[in-house]
Length: 147
Image (cartoon, rainbow, N blue to C red; front, side, top):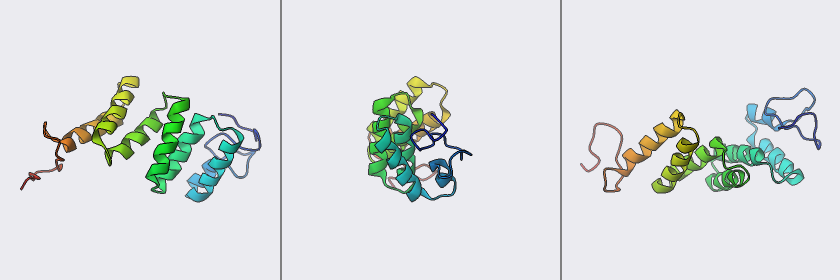
């Protein structure tokens, strides 16, 4: 990450004193539409920055645009496959769509960072929902979902 109006854009999440319109500031003010615009401007200037794709994925996810969020997270992973937050973003989206794809992403996160408690917890939730050997979803709680 860079700071100091590099190509007229600030590259830090915090509100930099040398920039008056950083995208991090827009996110902190919950102006996600403006943050999305700033990220897209950044990508026009430098289209191969994994961090920017990751942050754009976070904004799209917050705006509940899951398809766009997943696409941006995957672009970030194309440039840097070690970005755990982008992998976690993909896993959370896939958890609602395809359990096996979510498990693949979560296993990769755990392989890269064996102490990642969030990935281990989400993996456990996915396995519980998949059910014991049958593949049917299981509700978490005391009631048997088959009743």
